[in-house]
Length: 315
Image 1 (cartoon, one colour):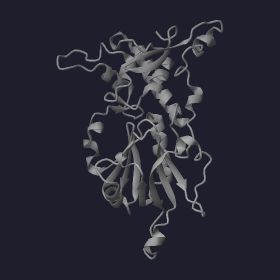
Image 2 (cartoon, one colour; image 1 turned 90 degrees about the horizontal axis):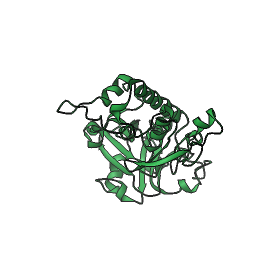
Image 3 (spheres, one colour; image 1 turned 90 degrees about the vertical axis):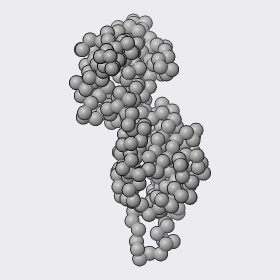
Image 4 (cartoon, one colour; image 1 turned 180 degrees about the horizontal axis):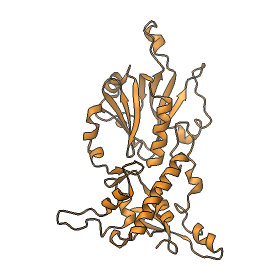
């Protein structure tokens, strides 16, 4: 599932490419993705609307429309959005669009730069570009909601602080780890830090890939209990979180499986992964210190997900 860097890459691309465009039509061959509305009703409500802005909350994508409605999109496991320009022969060109991973198109938004009132309806139906939704497993969802109701969505109400926001300071991270329950006890003290980083209700955006990379960067074992972490270790985790996510966004995300950007291209962060899916390989940090080191990357299950780490240098 795309994590924060991947979703942020998509949102940044969409703001550059389709912000201000007008939706003139919609096509779908998998109605189950469109929640609460038929494809016909959904198409009618979005047709003729301008896309005002695109933004992200956690791993959720929102496109505000000019009629007070918002397209809420979650990519789920294999979904990704492709922006294609229309060429004169009604084809779309792109280096990556023909790759198999980009061929599972189940939804298409037809977009136009602007409508000309002097042109007839047929001419205004001639699109300039498309926003196409490729989704191999068809788990993604598209919901049309009232813009004013976004903050009331259960999934948004539950979200914790965004991992790359300015509000996510070291002090805030300390406060999260020191949360107390109704009895005045530290509610997270017996939880493992590798689990805490994945809890979207506490910190939004970190998933399985970046959890492993963050804790390796910080030199912290994922099964360490929160109550046993020293302040200096907590600071290392915080700094590693900011560093890894910032670098991953700069490198346009990780294409571990199906993730692709709006050009259909893979991200680049998988080229610099140090531990994720490196089970059995030499630990890059231990090996750098001592090329005779036999330390290797381990894999274990934590909160039903695989986590990768080095037993020797992550304490």
